[in-house]
Image (cartoon, rainbow, N blue to C red):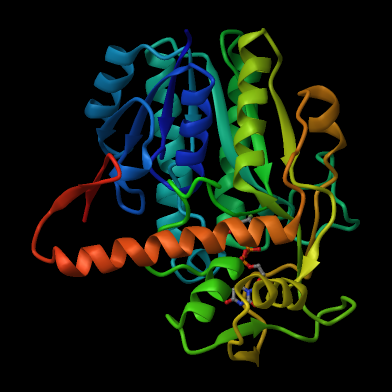
Length: 349
Ligand code: UFG
């Protein structure tokens, strides 16, 4: 079976893709510095704990594993943080991607799948936005990913042995329905996770950033895609590349969106809990509305989304929050220890 190296495979999206790869029978190796990822999230294959900036370790991992393709997730993902700390994003997302590509080409690896983002579009002229739209990111996060897309396109043009797929993610949410993996950041900023953690009582209120946008209810609209559908898009892209497909770029979203207020209503319904919601000023770097034209990926990659249902997305995220609560209770009991085994998983702190 083909061997796939996954950078950032211990993180939220990467771990769901590792799960899908493992279930499909691929041999997987995760390379992750565990800065935001977790050892227990890697359900299949080996985990090499390493930083992308550590070229020697990276080169040794690539040489030893000899992957048929690489999927690159390891990156920062928060728009607001990228505005306040742009160099972190240009370092982690852009410079490290360049270093990874250099190592891969030195080692003869020529198939690459890149986690890009809808943030490369900035504020598109029309939505749903398609892949031909101009790339005019309005925050450093989007710019950091756009630059990597440019590296990839130039490299594929210059090097006949290199082909890539860049997947532009819209708003990824939800969790493994079996409750094994999900978002586990220390200080989450994404809307759905933030709303659910507020319902749980971890935050005293949910702020709605901007209620004067030119949308129907004045709040921002986003295209929320379940993480397992995003994972299946990666497998479709991988099959395409391994079958000799040419380099290309695809949107990953459902094609329609929900406003912040609509998401908050669904979070209240799913949790059955009232929580405090406060109107707040706009957040820097937020486009008013962003939804995907997904015709290209559906037609070219034979991808069929299965979970286009906001209630299902929020429900799986809420179920995961219950698992997190149990882990935190156990963690309290075992304070002082580095790790333990739970349901067959090694859990480390
Ligand atoms: N929001 C709130 N309150 C919060 C958190 C978010 O009102 O506490 C709002 C934001 O202002 C935005 C919307 O909810 O209008 C969604 O915000 P998220 O932080 O959940 O997600 P972003 O749209 O900022 O970014 C995400 C990913 C990016 C991706 C982008 C594409 O982090 O990787 O979606 O739309 F590029």
